[in-house]
Amino acid sequence: MALAGGLGRRVKLKREEMEGEMATTKRTRFDKIMKYPALAILSTGLLATPAMAGVEWDASGFGTLGAVISDSYARYQRDIDDKGTLLRDSLIGGQVNVKFNEKLSITAQAILAEAPDRDDGIALQLKKALISYRPSHDWLIRVGRMSFGGLLNQENMDVGVSYDMMRLPNEVYMASQLYDFNGLSIAKTWNTTDHEITLDASGGFDHRYYRAYLAGDSEPYFYEANVWGSSLVLTITDYDQKMLRLGWSYSHVDPDSPGLLDSINSYQLANGQYALAPSSYTDTVDFNTLFFGLRFPLGKFMVATELQLISANGADAAPWSLGGYVNLSRKFGPWTPYITYAQMYSDSDSWDKINSVVALPQVGATQIDIDNLKSSIAYFNQQSVMLGTSYAFTPKQKLKGEVMFTHVGDRSAMFDQLISHEIISVYSLAYSFMF
Image (cartoon, helix red, strand yellow):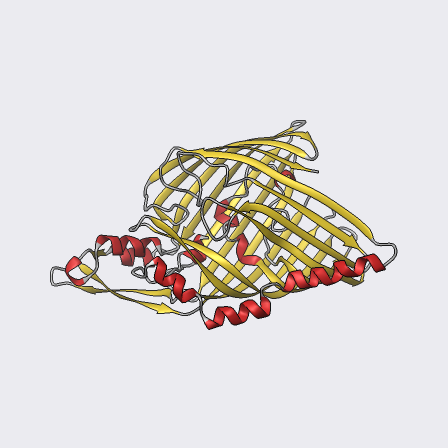
């Protein structure tokens, strides 16, 4: 995940050194205390179900088989290049709901999808494992593993049949994994004649993996982090198609790697050029995110738009970034063609700083070092246009196709390689289903 992955390790630290240092006392302590809290909560509830009369069970499955290829050698969104891949969009999952009564229920959801800790592999991932308690109609308390984010499709993003776009725009949804936690959520709902208003306050912990890429060494790497987070999300709906969502989320990231890039330093040479000086590092970084989402019908069309502002605590490796999109779609029987425009832009100070330095091998700063440092910056300057359609065979089966054109400005950390001022074409086809 580029936003936190770009905060990576010291650029000269080799992979084997980093793996050795991951086995720290801090990680062991938190693994023992908090690695499986959601599973423990779920198991306790499931073991109790046979003894309770009137328990209702509901199970469902979902999945997507997707193929995507681009016209560029540069890997985009981790997987997409001119060789093609099935990993980017393909997954299969299932969900079980156990309802004890009108107040108490349990939900569990897992998917088999691309592994979070390595490239070119798949892994089983627990997405939800929670107990829900509703003491009254207007209060909901949830405990366990869930998603705290304020995105419009945060809860259903893995269920491809639930939306018509080929995939949710990465300019916004790239950060979606930042909002998965083991914790507590308390929601209050107000119902009026025309609207339902919900305010959800959440907090929790997670231990997760981040991916980054060293362009100079031409290799990806993964590191782990303990993450504490909280959020406050306001949702207003009209009981039908309109939805407004506003939210704030906070994440405190504490990695097992030996340091997060905090400040890029340089010094001026006699000829007016700049050389790379030792960078400064920090042990943790804090992210604050503001959400805005709106979905509404416009005549026979449906409009959806989202904005997301992400800022870290002043780290050069994570300049503030603003991402957003506008989607316009219309149904024609089983067909739903759409057009989406998306853009992501970051503050350029960090990028300008590293671009001003020159390679000086005699003092240890080679071009490889500079390229590694460049790719450690979560800097985004890109625009995308998506043209696509879905075809609904049934309400539970959709075929989707899309062509996307992405223009990269100075740099986009969604690409592994340091490409700039290029237009990349991406072609996608997918079949999504529920059962």
